[in-house]
Image (cartoon, rainbow, N blue to C red; front, side, top):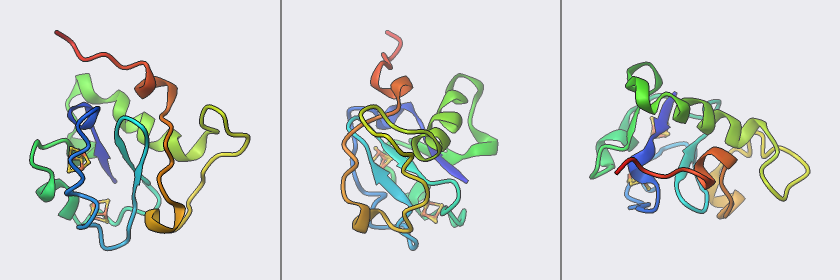
Length: 112
Ligand code: F3S
Ligand code: F3S
C-alpha cells in the first residue's frame, strides 16, 4: 500500500483526499493515514501531494519506515481515547474526521 510520511504532519494539504478512488485516506489530527487494506496502489494520491509525502511502502526510505507501521496501526490498534480499533471502515468520508493520531505521530518532532 501507499503510506503518508512525515512531511504531511502539521501540513495536511488535503489534495490527496479528492484523488483516491476508493476513499482510503483518513484524517487524523496532525496527518492523514492510508488504510493498507483499502488502498489499491493506484498511485493517484502520491501524484497529487504537492510535497511528496505519499509513497509506496516498499520505496519508503529508512528514516521514514516507522510511518509504514504507524499507518497500519492507525487502523489495527485502538487509538488514544478509543476502546476499539478503527478497522477497515470502507470509506473515509463516511467515517468522518478521526481527529486523533497514533501515539507515534502525536509525539513526533521533526529533526531540526
Ligand atoms: Fe487511494 Fe490509490 Fe492512494 S487507492 S490511497 S489513491 S494509491
Ligand atoms: Fe498530506 Fe500531502 Fe495529502 S501534505 S494531506 S499527504 S496532499
